[in-house]
Image (cartoon, rainbow, N blue to C red):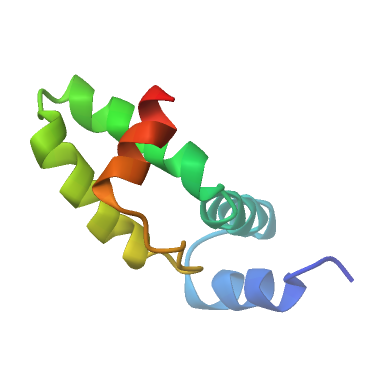
Length: 87
């Protein structure tokens, strides 16, 4: 039995996904939520910067997003977020 096989079976029963597609969705979701907090902060900073947001807009937004992650990251100050991005 593969990890999360019951979830894959549930998705195939309740959606139009086939077993292979459902397994890929589960793997993608698990990978998304296993991303370390510092990698998430860097990635989101880059995405939001590319949309034209300023750091004053980005860091509070990223801080709020971190608290809503499935496995909540530790609460980081705006300064700690900046240090993750800029070193």
